[in-house]
Length: 227
Ligand code: HEM
Image (cartoon, rainbow, N blue to C red; front, side, top):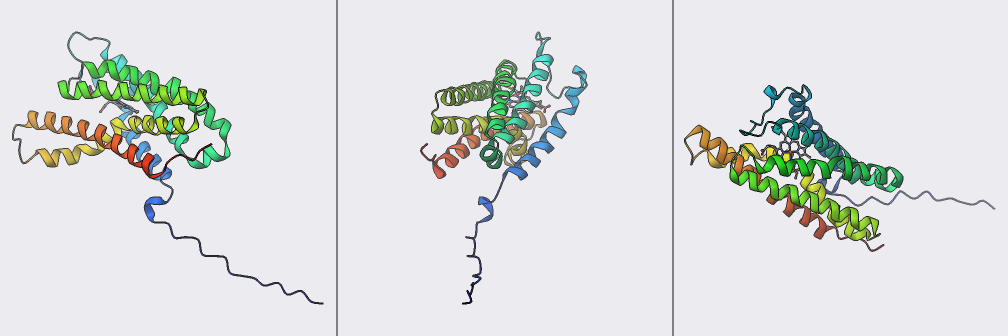
C-alpha cells in the first residue's frame, strides 16, 4: 500500500502592521545616536566642555552632572536590554542580572543626581521644577517596580517598569522634541535668549507629558497577562 503524503502550503501568517513589528532595534539605534552626541564632551572630565552652565555657588555641579550622565548611560543601555522581548523570554537569568544593574547602578543613582542638578537648573525655574518632578517619578516608578518583583507581583512589576523605562527616555525625548518646540515658539518670540529659554521649557514639558501618556497608552493597549 502506498501512503500519499500531502504537502499543504503553510497557512499565511497574519499580516502585522508596521507599528506592531519589532521596535527594539530602531529604538536602540536612536539611543546610540543620542549617546554618541551627548556623552563625549563629558568623557574629558573638563568642566569647560560642559553644555550645562554651572550655577553660581555650586562648584561641585559639574561632578553631579558627570555622575548623572554616567549612571544615566548605564540605565539607558540596561533598559533597552530589559525591554527586549526575546532576551526576557530566552534568558531570564540575564534579565534578572541586568535588572539589578539597571536599578542600582543606573536609574536610582542617576535620578538622585538629576533631582539635585535639576533643582538648580540654569534653564529657568519651570525646567528646574519639571526636572525635579521627573527625577522623583523616575525614582518612584523604579522602586515600585523593584518592590513588586521582590514580592512576585509580576503584573505590577511590568506596569511600574514600563513607566520607569519611559522616564529613562526623558533627556533623549526632550532633545528630540526641541526642534518642534522651536518651530512652535519662533513665530511668537523675537528675542533670541527668550526664544531659547521658552523652546527649552516647552520641550521639557512636552517630553514628560508625552512619555507619561505613551507609557499609559502602551499599558492600556497591552494589559498584562495574569501569571
Ligand atoms: C527622568 C530622567 C532624567 C532627568 C529628570 C534628567 C535630568 C537632567 C538634568 C536636570 C540635567 C541638567 C540640565 C538641566 O539643568 O536641565 C540633565 C542633563 C543631561 N542628562 Fe539627564 N535626566 C534624565 C535622564 C537621563 C538619562 C537616562 C541620560 C542618559 C545618558 C541622561 C543624560 C543627560 C545628559 C547627556 C545631560 C547633559 C546635557 C547636554 O550636554 O546637553 N539623562 N539631565
